[in-house]
Length: 149
Image (cartoon, rainbow, N blue to C red):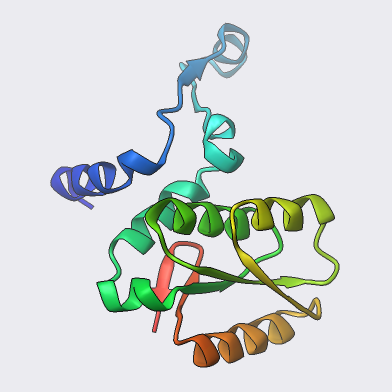
């Protein structure tokens, strides 16, 4: 990806994310023998870098796709990221989560207005239910920031 493309992505997601700090540690620099930098995405909205990918992917959808919503299967961070990004952009998010997903993750998705569909815990069960939801709602399937049509 070239610099211009990165700047386009930055401008596209900027309204929906926090600007997170880049920090360094003298101790780690000394141990490693080089300067190490940490991008602190733990300070990002919803707590992970996945918010950037979700906001970028949703922003690139057509108006027709946005009107039908987005769907994913995830047991945690991407479910939260897609739900929050969708809420901020004004898009409905349908989230397939395994029944065994941590309750705190489910609560966060609901806080971000994501509609949860509970599935079994195997990848096939999750994928199959996500496909059913995609067909029923006409939603665009997204997986880790990638649009799958």
